[in-house]
Image (cartoon, rainbow, N blue to C red; front, top):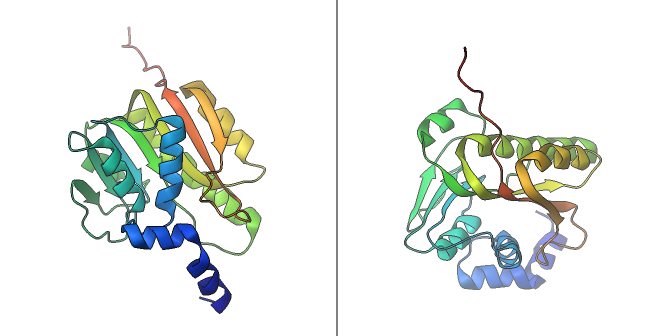
Length: 205
């Protein structure tokens, strides 16, 4: 970790606020801003948080859904316990994750998954789109009708293709960048609002 990065982070008001408020990461402020603007969470909601480590988004979600709601945090990395949050140590795409979730349904699916950075932007962009697509794939099985979906990815030429994939399943698809995202960062947040499940095949003749 370079000295310049450490120095910039210490001057970053979102980083300092996250440390002060026990939010584990500055990313918590990104989700909080999206939640305020798009009313992502309602008290009592069930939330599936993908790529949840170190737990900043799960804390925001848990606070917003209240004691009547529930949050399931998924990540292959360990997450320090969070009151009222169930942690599942699995990768998204692992069949064991779907088995573990069983027949549970969620009002909100959120994904802050990020690829290991290779340094080749086109590769990192494509990998981030693949992660967002993997998160979206879980919606058809686990997201409730009229549910909400949030995924982080890096801006690039594959973004429009992913937006087209989401459009049939959501009343509205939004691309946005919350204030806590660093200005020079290429990250963008894709929101799907009011989920419409894909039609299920009917019984055979």
